[in-house]
Picture 1 (cartoon, rainbow, N blue to C red):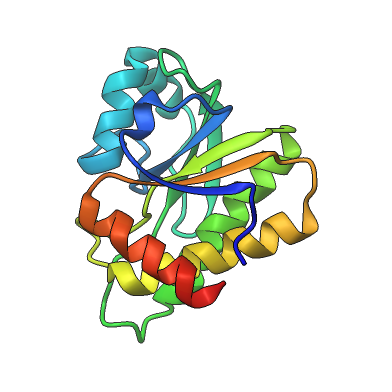
Picture 2: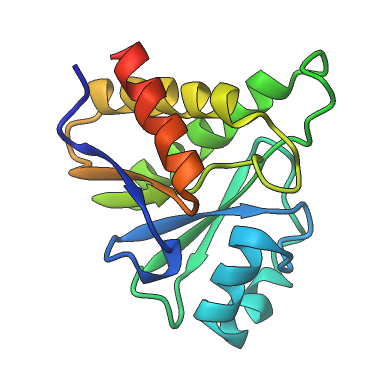
Length: 172
């Protein structure tokens, strides 16, 4: 059975009322396409300004900034792996994105956080595989952390939403 503190929704991450949103960023942290571009546009120029001071971020790691013009107070920037067929440590790198992000959630006493489907856009990670990794990491975190009230897996497309719901039903 799924954890009642986990929600899977379809929508726009930049509009969510949560303490923190996770940005599927690139290594530079300076904006890009997809979720990254949407978050940078919605947050405004202050986000880019502070990201320029962070010296980028390695794949599988995460850094945190303010949310600026977003409803969320925080943006956790994590860099997912580019898919190279699955034999290049992609699964572990993706799982590390969730663990590193949750480390920042704990460090900053964040009570609610939303994750997009990391690496499944232009980075090409297969959505069915990525959704399972995401949900396993979210479940493991929620089992050991009682203070986080809400984790949202937010999917932009209806197809991604359906894949996440199927994965949730199969895993839990």
